Length: 214
Length: 187
Image 1 (cartoon, each protein chain N blue to C red):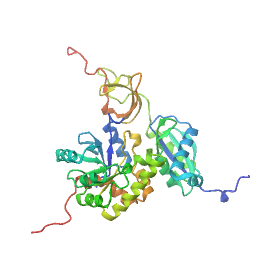
Image 2: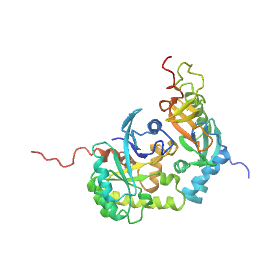
Image 3: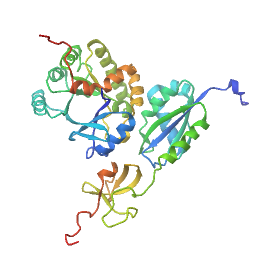
Image 4: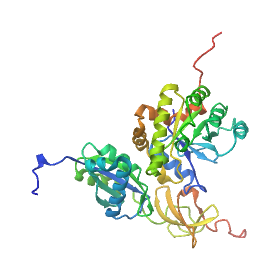
C-alpha cells in the first residue's frame, strides 16, 4: 500500500522539478506521486508514476488514449464531464481516475456512475486544491460535492484518490494536513489512508477476490 | 480590567510552524491578517471568535501562533488553507503544538542548527577548473538562473531576465553549470 499524491504538475507547467517534488513528498510522508507528462522513475525512494490527464475530449477519444497507454504504467485520469460522459468513461478499461468532481454539475456523478466505477475499479479523485485555494462559493460547492461523493462511496465502495494538483511544492500538503482537510467533509483517518492508497489500488488491483480452484 | 490569577485564565495552545519557501521574510502583522482571513473564511466569525487565533512572533523562518485550547486542530486545518500573505505565495507547515512558548522556542533552537538555510552555491555542481566555493552561473534546462536559497539538496532559484522571472524550486541534480559544455577540445 503506497501513500500517493495523485496529481502534481512539474516544470514547465509548474515551477518545481520532479526531483524537488519527490524530495518534498518524502518529507511530507508520501511514498509515491503521479506527475503529469513525466517518465516513470524512482527518485529519492519515491516512486514517480507518469500521469496522463485528459480534459475536454470526447469519450471515444478517451477510449483510444486509454488503449494507447495500456502497458506503459501510466496513470490515466479523465476530467469529469456531464452524466452520460462520466458513465461512459467510468466503464472504460484503462481509465484509472475521474477528476474534477468539485467543479462538476450536481447530477454529473450519480449512483449509476458510482456503481459502474465500483465495478470497473475506477477511482474518484478528491482534489484538495479546491479547499486550499477556493474561497466562498467555490469552496462551499467543493465541500458539498465531496459530501455527496462520500455518501456514494459508503454505499458503493469505489476507490478514492487524493491529489494536491500542485503546480508548486508550496501547494503540496503533508499527510496530516490532508487528513485535517478531508475531515471537513466527514472523512475519517481510515478513509483518508484508504484514499491515499487509491492509486496503487487502481493501477495494481492484485489478486481477484474470487478465485477459481480446479 | 485587572489581570486574572493563573487558575482563572483561559487555557491556550501554542503552535510552531515553518514558513515555506525558506528565506521568506514576513511581518507578523501581515501574517496575522492572513491567518485570521483563513480562519474566518473556513470556519466563520463565530468559530474564529471562539478560537482566538493569534500570531505571536516570527523567528528564524518559523512562526509562533496561539489559539484557545481545544481549537488547535481546527486552527491547523485553517493554516493549511493559507497560501498568500501580502501577495507573497507561502505555505505554513505546522510542526508542533505545545502548552508553553518556552518549549517551542527550545524546539526552534534544536531545529535551526540542524538545517542551516544558506544563500550561495557551495554544494552545487561546480564549474570545471574552479573551486567549489566560487560563485558561478547556473542554468535549468536552457534558462539561466540565480540561486536564492539552498538547503541540503533543495535549491530555490530565480530565472534571470527583465520580466517573467519566477522562483523555481529545484534540486542540485537539476542544475547545470553555465558554459560547462563549451570548453574547447584542445584543452
